[in-house]
View (tube, rainbow, N blue to C red):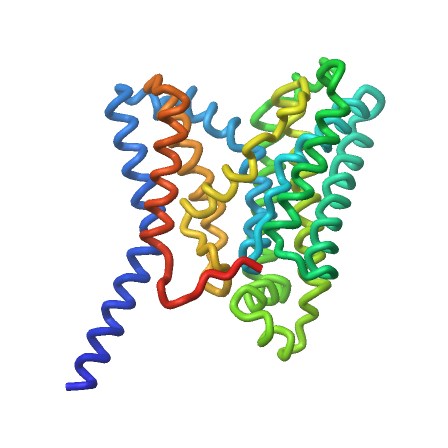
Length: 319
């Protein structure tokens, strides 16, 4: 009798895990069908699909870095402010040399990411608190630098907004991110830290240096994304990158990413989650729904996905 009950419980658990794994893909298919039907399939036209891809560049690059951070069970709310500050650097330096501008923007992002990781690790302050503080600090820097007028990029940068230029760059970052996570010891280390920091230390993982490196890497990726952001928008203001942090988190959770981190994470959460988020935003815009109602819908959907995918047997602890 006990064996039968254990077998039934195990079968139920497997079925639940399979449902959670398939839920993002089911959600993406459902959204595409719903918006396709309601817009007379305008949402699935080639022109609109191109628009969705273009709107996802920055989000997908930043999501790769935050994916590594969340795998460790931590958070990063400074991504938007990194985009803002690094975009200003790109817009200014691109007037002299584009390659220099890209290098400096990556360096700016890496430095801010290092600051986040250093404060988080050395002072043992929650990543949530640290990155909220740096978000306000560098948002203030961005506002100060654009007080008198927006920082405008040189006109030649507009010509770089081409699919054949940016899509390969994004694909390379996704490929490298997948390889780092799935095919190297780095991926195993961050999963081990997310699953149990104490156990990771006893297994020989240098937890402190790994955390700092992950935050630095996420900052560098945001710095690179700032170049694409500058190409796309052309003019940088104090609000550049605003709400990007929450958009990243929503996208990753919609993609099936466990908030608690650990070994159950799948890199596919980045791609599926960003697609879900982009399709949702695009579909709501095509239906001409009020922006405030759009925010409400995104919030309700986000909450529903968290409730549906959270493992109640694991305590959610943000490190």
